[in-house]
Image (tube, rainbow, N blue to C red; front, side, top):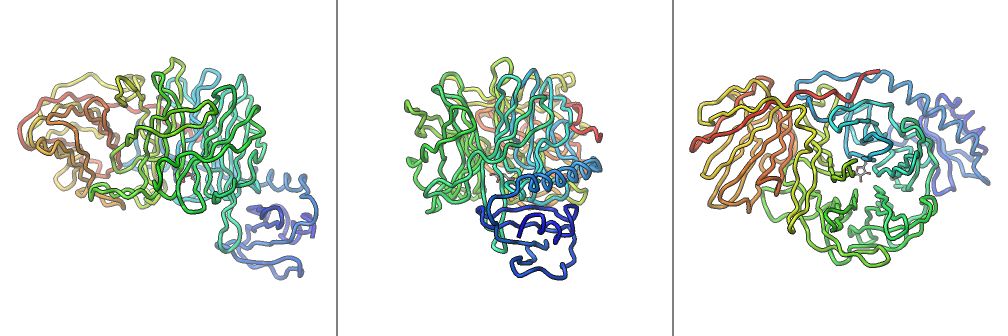
Length: 543
Ligand code: FRU
């Protein structure tokens, strides 16, 4: 059956919501209409897959690319129409200086890059529901990394190779062209067979993107369809692509490809054997240099923790690496990027003045039950942090640009009587040297507590007295010293805690009522410095 007949059978292009091509043997269209089509000829099967009626037929000869393009264009037009109705859902938990989705679900930051005088930042976004499905790339630009402008989504899941999600990836600025590399995700049939391709889209105006389709279609040998999240970088005279991957025996690894022109990619092999069994899948690699040393960030999934206060199996790591001449490398020293409740899939960019700035998703893959879903949105990004490597020490600090949002500093003496600071968006800096518990975002019933134990040199953050959400309630970090210097950054429903000038960081969401604006400290009194953080320009204009 030809594609045109299939379209006719589907009730026309307007009744198609997805197009799928299974290993180039079968063509499937899924229908908008939820009512079962009356009949189908013998060479067309009719199935209800995940509440979608799908018509599938064997492919005869080449795909009619014009018709496929017609379907994709119709799907993108429909997506653009639907996006026009997006609104910023009002919610008391919405951050005022972090990026959050106007509605729907946000996850990984994507394509963070400085290009033609502007920062571009994209994120994984399901605009239509607080569910992990059918992601597009939301698109924001900024001149100062603080105030963001909202552009139309750059990439929507409207083609056969990305119809179940334009998954994560990175950007490359090359002259006037902005290259976006991403993983095309599609799921076939009742068993939702995963089909993965690595795709390219380019733009010459930084706003409108042309998809070029898959640049890598085949899976390398010994690797499952869990291979994704391309990071592209130029090194030793060639373009390199790193992908998070899973081997057939369910070990996480990185796959390396190389290219002369960013269009034709050759597989070079897997990296990371020296880490042995280190999770069943690695996601979202990043690669960069800090003070002459190269580093790789990755998100290993399923690494068991040996602490009851850190049960998160998906914790990002950063490794220093040692490179060989052919751009292959081995992993050396390991650091945990963030010890908090919610931090995953970070990306970095190089700023115009040479700083390495990281932003992450303040959420976790399995965590989709937060009180914001009642108001139609979920998750946010972290603040942007500069990564610094000096004398063998890796630290993070808030980007200096954040200063523009800070009020005058105010000295406060913290003690057991709660002080009402009348805001939940603030910076609090304090040094603690004895047993004590700091309560933040507090009212009579709710609070987040941070307990310091100098004997065990440990900090324990507890969100059990907050409005409940899924996920753990206690996180502990050890080896913080007998005296700790804290800088806490709060934004309505998030906390980012920098310990000892960013040697360790803990980030997480925590929900207390709007009037929970007090802070207090049990134990010895301490002198602290407080600054309010004013709202930035929100990255959504509702145009
Ligand atoms: C990480 C991740 C990526 C994938 C994306 C899909 O959170 O699973 O590996 O590309 O999210 O939204």
